[in-house]
Length: 119
Image (cartoon, rainbow, N blue to C red; front, side, top):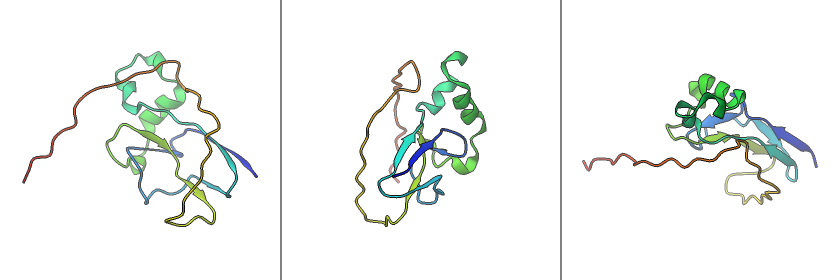
């Protein structure tokens, strides 16, 4: 079993949601252990004091390429991760061993989702 560390960078994250068109940023074998870094609140950097966000998050907010912007959604996601031998339709068993906050604060934005007009 190999151990991998997937850091949060402009090359390893994407914004807005999942897409099958994204190129995997890490290839692993079944049973490997992966430590994944991620941040939430991509757009919170526009509203928070500068000291709120660490330099690596600010770098992502300022430099994330358009090709990594899947949708307008606020979620910054790390990955995708390719598992050698896995195929569409397979069930994956994932064990989450630990979760640790990356930022020393929490937030809960609120708002409304624009309604689509009935055509």
